Image 1: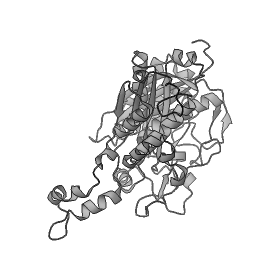
Image 2: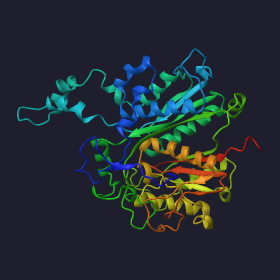
Image 3: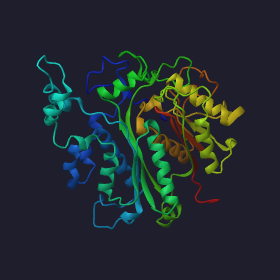
Image 4: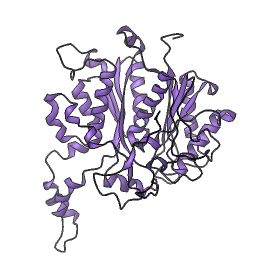
Length: 422
């Protein structure tokens, strides 16, 4: 993001030419192999991991290593940093799409005498041609299940499935679990891959995808808050953060990346009964943001940067912009926005945790990343136009995520100053 280099590229592991856009935020298959990440004793279990689960397991491994934790997955005989019963896990998940190739044989054997698909024949014959453990790959709680087994997290655990808000809500649940004393540390976040035919088709039917041709520049497809914004691009990704009680982190000599100081959540009224469209007068996003600011003891004028959904979907950009203007008033056009989707696409349940990770890194490095995609100032009167990465004095960054389904979540992340004023 500091380089202004997008991760959106042509989908190459299946033919996506029939969809609205052949582009996505793709993690190259040759750059990520979950078998190289899990302990040797656990490699057999990777056979029943969907791509979403692989992403969560990979992100958790990076988080554990970065936080200098010892868990059951660590090499050596050292005991775990924390008692397993004091380690929680909350991971957001999406609607995991089954692999099309795995469904092919089962579907082909589920036809009637005329060769048409027959749901009754599916029940009698077709399902028997699925692999025996097929369902264990696609249950949403499998992300948290595998992570907790690998790292022996025996504390409070949960899975939240609320589209793009999933991982932000999971972070909030982990924060509450730690605050009420039921855990010292939680692995928390989310992961999802929508880069498969069914995942793309669902989003296309929902009218959320932009139109693009193979010759288009992938860096300019997603244009958040732009007058010519035409929709989003899907992605696959996951973010897992180590949330740790402050006194516990300091006691073991760890300097936090940032402080999770505020949290708020709300639900929009779904005027279309599906949550595709927010009401014109909706105040639910404002409520979530105000909740995060209030719980963090932060006044609106103290926020130095904002990382909204910024999807490039015109209707959702409008919702984001209205909320920013409502909460921040005359300052709305002066607070720099960090736009993530042009880099990684809409990663569904993984998006919010990746966004919080980016905000935390901005605070640690005291820098704002480049904004790409847009070619001119936005149409909503916000600081969302194109720019290069630049140094910035950042103390508090607001991350908020709206979603397909109407769930909203806001997180306030604060610069770690070595315990000053804590």
